[in-house]
Image (cartoon, rainbow, N blue to C red; front, top):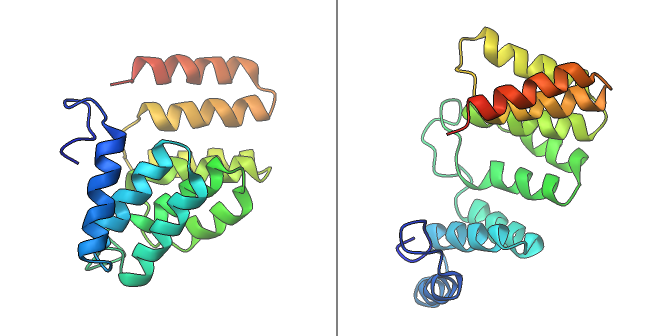
Length: 169
């Protein structure tokens, strides 16, 4: 994490070597498997990423959470994200449905719903978050644009794109 960040310049090779060395020293180090999975994912090595994240989850089935109903965890939702990046939306959706608390990443489940041909369910999920009083953000606006585009609702899709741009950080 000290070498792979915006401030230090995303030094993938050095970070990869450090994490691999940590795993040589302690093969059961959950944080190192998570870090390696994250590195692999960000550089497009999805199968390797999923393998590391699954290893992490096998070492820590609670995924770093004391209370799974109030904690998003690290590995499980990233496994689902890897699956939808691989266009395996049905598998990703099954993982998301097994997570008791999605928190701010509910938009990712909406991507999976849209990917399996359920854009209306994706919109309903996004609406349920809004109804619960959760703040509107660019990720949910972007997924809303995707769902509207899937439905052929161009004007609403373009309005959602504009909202995503307006709310971007």
